[in-house]
Length: 64
Image (cartoon, rainbow, N blue to C red; front, side):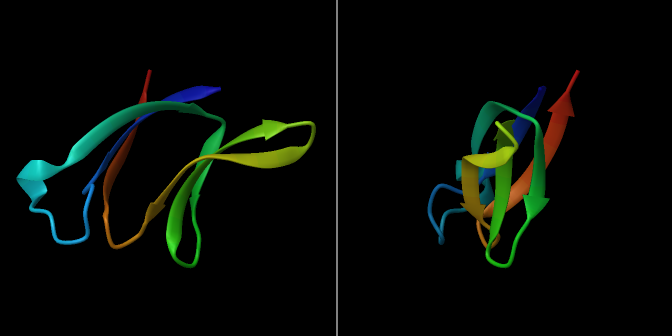
């Protein structure tokens, strides 16, 4: 499992300075049709850990 730092706007119309940052443990992440999704694999299934609408997503970094 990896640790990611995710930055996103909490509200659709929020300014960049009001961005929120979360540190999340996940096996990976992917860009879906409307969301950026971080997931963990459990028993061969992907379990969503965090879903962020693409319009509010700013940045993701892997923390080593």
